[in-house]
Length: 215
Image (cartoon, rainbow, N blue to C red):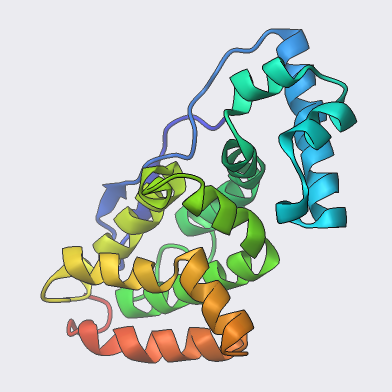
């Protein structure tokens, strides 16, 4: 797990703290091996059959662990989805924190927000079913994930720095549009592409950013 780090800098080079996905956890060697086997089995089954067709029993059998071990460690299939997504979300987080602009530090807030929208939609398109499961496993699950906290802090910071009049509400509205359920509706039911959807959302949010470039 990554140590705590400072969040991305604004274009004015003022650092802000962003939460890190997960926290250091010391595991016994056998528990770590079981976790690796379970996640590998789950990823293979989800890829081969689709998330909805896989049960916790299927994962336990494929991983060679007891059902009790599986449920104690992950809780339910939503917990499994969140664990699988953790590493992929960390990759996007690292690009936000230390990657090149415009996604990383150094670009104007509006450009960074537009880059985040495009990068997050690309991330969603690759593992939409897993994100949907993690966000809807229980009522309000989306708001309790570490990833949602990170994305919200990042969007709020850029909106505030860029001059949005109500960055709190604006960040929530943007992330509601980027929820897996909403994006799935647009991509599958409305037959929109991730690229055209990203372009539309960027055009929508840019007028919210009234600050001069580089502020």
